Amino acid sequence: MPIIAEPMTTEIAEQTDVDLESLNAIFETADAARMVEWAVAQFGAEHTVMSSSFGAESAMLLHMATRVAPDMKIIFVDTGYLFPETHLFMEQLRRRLNLNVWAYRTMQDPIAWLAKNGEADPAIRNDRNICCAVNKNEPFERAMAELRPKAWLRGIRRDQASTRKDRQFVEWSRRFNCYAISPMLKMTRRDIHAYLKQHDLPYHPLFDKGYASIGCNPISCTRPIQIGEDARAGRWAGSDKIECGINVDNNSLDSAQI
Image (cartoon, rainbow, N blue to C red; front, side):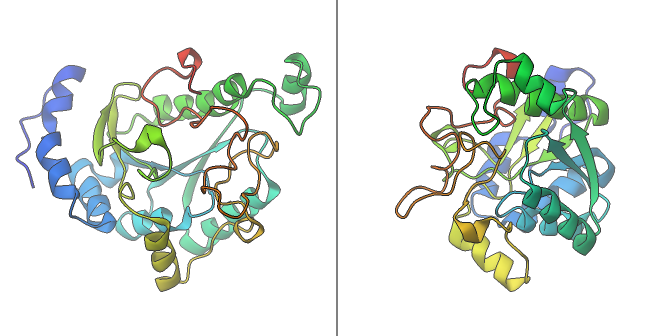
């Protein structure tokens, strides 16, 4: 592992605590479990959090992380518009893996927010960007400000979206003032399937109904994919939106990409 510099006090100096270039080169040939082990050893279980949407394949990283740090804080954002199956899946995994779930909810009343913002049909979002910003990004930003982790485990993969193709395993997040660590970055869906099968872990209950990527329940935000479509084609279909905003390193309310 790369040499770690002496602790420093400023944010800019803190970014140099880890030799990112060397570390990311090593992780290109390491497996995901080793990255999780490194993160917990480097930053401490009490200073490491994980985010989970409890989506289609979320069980893998949850299982991997809690084998290393059983009491790791799991940040779960409840936007007010999640599928009932997502809540059931979260509870199923919470019981099975004894998860330490920290749920952060939107500060808006979901029904009142729709009326206030001219969203007459709950099954459709006319302004998906502002809905994500207010109901998903704000709770997550609040969680990170409150918990103030040194490291954040997340489940993004390079094969999910064009915005993720150049991401690195360990990055400094200016937005959240911590290291963002992506153990699954180079994995494929086949790799994930093999891990889930090996450990007898479940998919999200909507996965078998064609929902390959699962977010909020308006059909403009999540729909089943068709034969031959990319796994992410069901997210924000018919628009150029490809990120909810949590995994982009800027302020959620200022980014046109969310």
